[in-house]
Image (cartoon, rainbow, N blue to C red; front, side, top):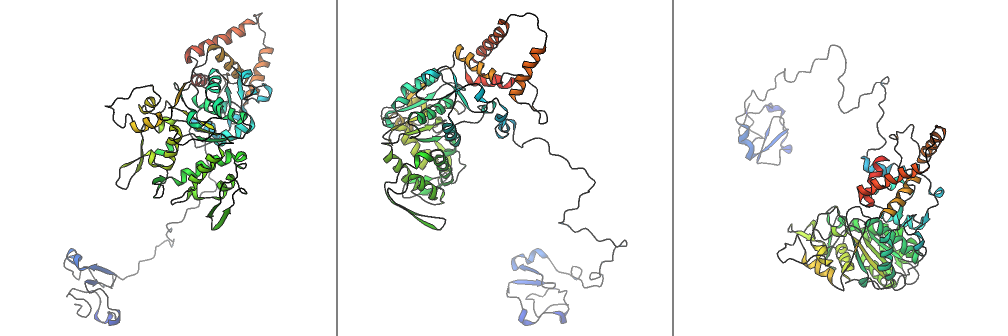
Length: 527
């Protein structure tokens, strides 16, 4: 039967003439064709794809409208989308392992340090600026206040095996004494005249020396010092954070990265920030609440707590306000800036972020990158304090930092990815940066360090500590002493134990050449 009333083209329609809709329900699209019962609508451009329409394609026979025969067994089909009930008799499978992390990360997350020997029984000294000479060539621990601040700043880096001890420890070596004479003694000068970069082989203790400098600064000024620490500058350039362009500053901002960094600084420097009153009024809105901080009444800590513009998805001047306040108070409270892995900014000065034209952005075009370079070059200087940087051997080599430290001569044939001349010249300005070569330990210091490890139960060869029968280091030492006391030993001279320990010291010293990182790894394998 042809449809002559509602179809603009004479096609075969499967709808009987008396079953058509009224004219009021006529389709509003004159360039489309209605097929069947009005459920198929196609543009005129696609009609040719259908081909000729026949009665065989559209039929109203009784067979096509027949109801499906019910199943013989009378069971209903299982509806999809519903979870089947598990068998109550089935045994539950226990999940293996104590964590989903890999072993290197699991040792930090499982709190293995709680099973280590308590330092109160070992009579370990505390790192103190006034008693630094008495602690030379000895293992020391950090004060509770310093340990708390350094932990919040993430100064104790991953994979340094701090989990072997109940608290982070460090050795006061010749490097510590030299750093005190060349850097710590100048913290009351301008930061542009007190800039230093720690260099040395991998594992020699550059990051540990940065931690010692922070703890000594807290001890020297009785906590009245502001610590600005950046543990991984790679986060500025790796492209993992959001960024937005601030037309007023002419720089890109990274809201989430800046917010998290400010949160660390606020927690680590809470005591001293409460002593810094604002030098001008500040008004802002946070969480639909208007804040009006008054000059002299509110502190810089109040500004960091209530102001959420650091993580604002939009242009903000909160970070500039924070830096200006620090510059004003630096005449009374020194500012110690420490940047670990500093060569992460210089080995490839172009970041993974892109301009609108898809060209890579230079790290100095970011607010944080520009701030770090100005501090390192001396263009931005605090009235009191210092800038302490440290390189990392885990980062690819580049000529930019060695040229800036006068360790290499610039080659004009180098490309920008080999040496960024502008960055190197900037770091050479204002007197340049003083390189500090971190030395390895001598044999006496190695012996002292291993004696501490022996007392701490680290030099024990024991079975793998499974969860049911895990034993602490104290229990292992006590069990060994009881076993040795019960055994019948021939009249062996007392020097045998000392000779055996001396042989272990000689072996590890030759293997590591006095490198603390290699020593820890060798002992950690046995541990």
